[in-house]
Image (cartoon, rainbow, N blue to C red):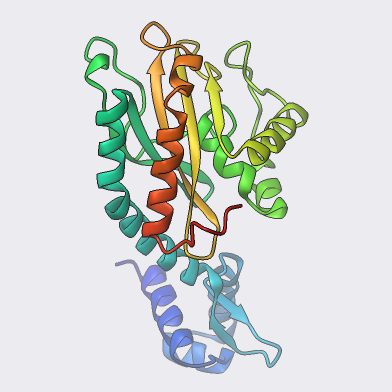
Length: 253
């Protein structure tokens, strides 16, 4: 482990134990206060530590969020595995599970359809999906707090992949309003013209939308309207997974 990384780890651990003063940080690291301050400021910018009003440093929300995200990803995939595979058997469509991870929406599970043996979908577990030109991306975006959604989209360079892409913020915002109103999203060939998709939100125990489940078909196999015929099954699956995560499914939106 490099010296700088080891120093950062040591400071994070000590800040988790008790409020850490600049003097103590310098002593722990065996460096001058100015060096310790630079390391602390770097950790603070990443929200791994937080400076208190008293001038000491404590564990920041960034570490807690990473821990919750890691645990949530493991639990989510575990709880969603059986319902997703049941959905795939009932519908015959490829099924995806995607989750917001950092600033990206990542596929964390996929159940392939045998109908796609000849034509492989570009999606794969661990791969990021377009945040604005996919059903799962738009579903998660639609339910994020406004400030978080704005932060994520501030980094996006909109591109028109196909004629149906929401290629600007105004059209995307209008689409996100529709998604919240109806409770599900579609991808009508918005990134790849031949790929159709519908997605539904998955909530955690606090009611936050943390992921999305989707069904995907190639247009020559199923049109978007045909795919939407299985929407009730998808919505039921998303509700079932949310219930497994501790969400009170009687609450609704």
